[in-house]
Every structure is written in structure tokens, then in C-alpha cells.
Length: 273
Length: 144
Image 1 (cartoon, rainbow over the protein chains, first blue to last red):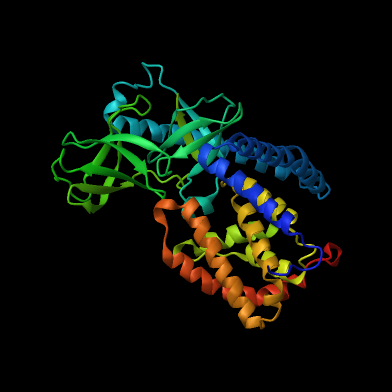
Image 2 (image 1 turned 90 degrees about the vertical axis):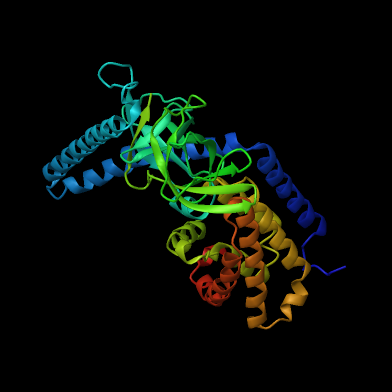
């Protein structure tokens, strides 16, 4: 038996380790602590926003007023607000253009149908996790505090980036297409259908092809579109192109698809309602 | 928490180089080795759970790895005390490689790379040489 340093207890060391391992197992296997993490994330974001809007900004502006620059600051604030508004308007216009490029424009004619784009802004995004790990999530808030439910399509000016998962009334989480746990039904022009999964790498999804069912007529840069199966994503929207073909076995092929939409390209997004 | 924040900021720049910075973990190893009475498993679990919540990873991941480290360091405390500084640096770098590997398996299962584990060993080795110097900048009120 190894001798421990003074005041160290073998029982405490092992029991705390086992306790933590149990927590890890429960969360890994059953997502037991997901609500706790959601609560923590939404609370920390709320505190961040609240302290910024109601504590730091008022204190900062009151200090600035001492230097007789209040008027300039106010003008700056108004210009910033106008700029934000303009960005959102541009963003909605660019989304309409994307939608018109695709076949869904007939279904979602913005003037004649009930199709609505809710402008949203990024509240929290862990870029480190996006580059290093499989979990690609983003937390957004709608611009006019419109309540956004789960399983709504989120787009930016380059295309579809993911779908929503409701957190609370103010915020919602977006699971990006490249997230390991995300699936999206896609098709190509040769009527090949598959359920593409997130690869866990930025802007990459993959699709496994059973060569006993489908012919290998895939080429690099071949375009893929949403198939509309599953009822969440509208059909016919270009999602990306084949980047690489990997032979898993003689009977199985993996297509790595590079997505068109980069979630880092803008802080403004739209939720298709 | 501050160290974890610094780590995440450094990792943003290192992500293209297949290296992961682990200053938080090396600090924990160093502090546990220097003062095993104060850096106990409760402290490690507490810090680990906080980091798990803050980074939105599996709850208990950091806590398990931190408490495991405390356990291993405590069990081999007198053995480690006989090591030279270079040997200690190599030992903690090996611990860090295991830490990086275990985390990568759980957090980026589909993109696990041995290269990251291998290169993180070297980064950990050089980082650990700086850790004792950095500890001196800690406020004395912390008493660690």
C-alpha cells in the first residue's frame, strides 16, 4: 500500500473520484444534467446582458457625462442602433434572395404566404468548442423578443446553418449542421437520398452510402440539396458540395460534404417560422 | 476559472496546429504536488464541476479527471518527491497527455487524433517549466 501524505484520507480520495465518475457516466449515458447546464448557460447569459445594460453602461455613460461628451455618446448610440437595424434589414433582404435562388420560393413567397423570417442575434458562441470538439452549438436571441420554439430552421446569408432548440422565452440554442448529434435528410440531382450527419468539424457533414443499394456515381464538387423529408427543413435548398469520398469498405462509401453556410460569417441570423 | 478562460483563448489560436494548451491542469498538478493537504479531492471536484458548467461539456468530465489526478499524485507523493524537476515535468506532461486524450475521446470522438495527444505532451512539458514562476504571481491571500 502506498503511503499517503499527512491528512490525506484514502477513503475520501477514492469516494470523491467515484462520485465524480458517477456524475460523468450519468451525463454521458443519459444526459441527466442537461437541464442543469441549460439553466446555468441561460442564467449566465442573462446576468451578462443584465449587468451590461443596467450596470456597466449606465455607470460608464455617467462617467463620460462628466467630460461633457454626453451628446456625442448619445449620437453614437443612436447611430449604432440604426446600424444594427440596417444590418438586420439587409440580412432579411439577403435571405429573401437566397430563398428565391432555390425552388422553395414558390412555397415560401414572402408576400403571398405566411412565411416569416425572425431576425436573431448571437448571444453566446463558444468558438473554441466549435473548432476543437464535436459539439457545435450557438445561443441566439430573437431581435424583437419573439418567442422561438424548437425545431425551426436557422439560416444566414449563405444558407441553412442549423435548427433551434428552445432554452427559455428569451434565448434559444441552435444546433449547427456540423454538430455530431445533428441529422439532415439530403438528396442530389441523381435522386440519391441519405441522412447526413454532422462530422464534428467546422462546416462538414457526412453521408454513408451503401454501395449494394446505390451506384457510385458521386463526383467531387457534386451539389447536395435538402430533401425535405422529416418535415423540418424545406426541400430543394442547396446545402453544400462533396469535398471528399472515403472508401469505408468495398460495400460502403463515405461522402464528406462541405457546407455552403459558415456560421461565423455574420452575427445576424434568421429563423424560419 | 480565469486559467480555464485563458486556456480557451489560447486554444483558439492553437487549434490549427493540433496542440491543446492545458495551463489549468498543469497548475492543478503543481499545486497538488506542492501542497497536497490544501489541494484536496473536494477542491478538485469543485473546480472541475465549475469548469464543466462553464464550458458546457459532460458534467463531471473535468471533475473526474482532476480528482483522478489528485488521487494519483497523493498515492505517489513520496515517490514524486524523489524526482528531479525535469522528471516531474515529464511525469506531469504524461498526465496531461492522458488528460488530453481522455477529453478528446469524449468531446471529439469522430475526430480523435493521436497527433494532438503527442504534441500536447511537448507543449505541456514546456508550459510546466513556466508554471512554478507563474504561481509566484498569485495573490498571497490565497495561501496556496
